Length: 68
Image 1: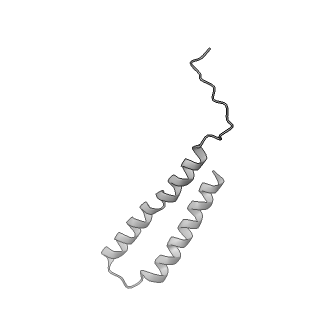
Image 2: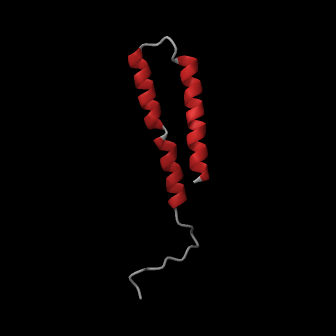
Image 3: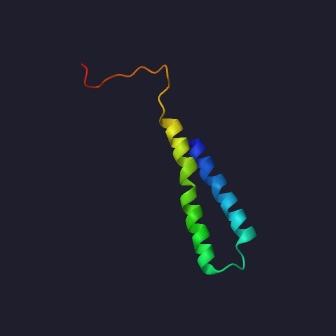
């Protein structure tokens, strides 16, 4: 969870820094496209992080809830 928070904060800071650097003076349609793409792109590293968090360790013992 802490890594996810760090990811979101760092991603937003980098996205804002890049937007301030490169987007002033560009057409509104281009700004909309860049912000939409940036709003979707953070999902890729988040998915990787979530898959890593959900991975069961190799030495974990699985307990079948249906087996009594």
